[in-house]
Image 1 (spheres, one colour):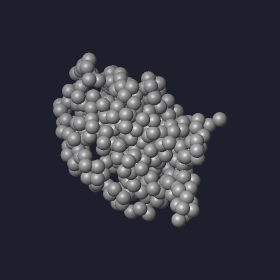
Image 2: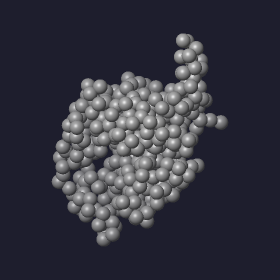
Image 3: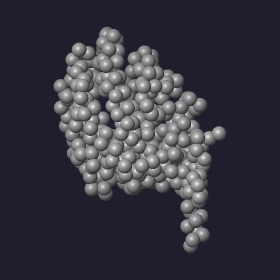
Image 4: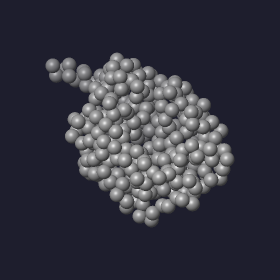
Length: 358
């Protein structure tokens, strides 16, 4: 028994939302869904839509408009309204540089030094930087209903701690004062869960959890000891399917990732695609496969090659590996969905119908 049939009634192919959810749980699909799980909003996309940074971070209507372009302009099967990684920090009282059309937002500080410095306001979910995300999700839900998968996003407790504390001191504390690190992440876990579930209430179908944790940052054992328990518990507390995202090379800890309670892993192409598939197969679905370097260079033949590899290896949800560089050409971003359709049964059917009508 499959989660969804391969076709809707009257011969129409699966709606994007069903495609995404079916693939997320390992079900049958008419073609692999193409998804935006972080950000695909380059300067060319912003120019085409007529919405730029920082407005798309600060105004819910503009956030929803730009986010929706992943579906309306690029042809993807998902919409991710939460574009940046600073909204939680802003709601927790940190000063933010909200960036510009050619510059991503960044936390300016001041950084915290100990767990006792953490102050989580009772009205956290009503703070402007949180409310703008929730309102944007509601707008997308109203505009697209159940047609498209809406992906919410949070920073994982470990990643949020890296934003809020001095990174070097925090990393050192993992060795010199592990209790401090665990106390900090335990506090932030509740913040993460509350924001995630508020996005689900607003209309998100899936929650992406962004986290630091590649081999350049820590050993597999440190990852296991500091993140393992968190990642056993976090997906259970979130009221929607969950996707774990980690930038960088995670080849040496794929077994820990695969054994977590996340439903899907969004991997970086520093991990060999076939290895990521081998280590996660039967345990969780896999998202990604398209290198940001390839997209930035803009050669469609290279996009085609990476799409082909991802589809042949069995990546469940085709996606850029992370937030794309702002200078990425629009043609490359469109090329992902176009190539997936071309290589799928859906694409072949469209070509056959075009030939018949000609």
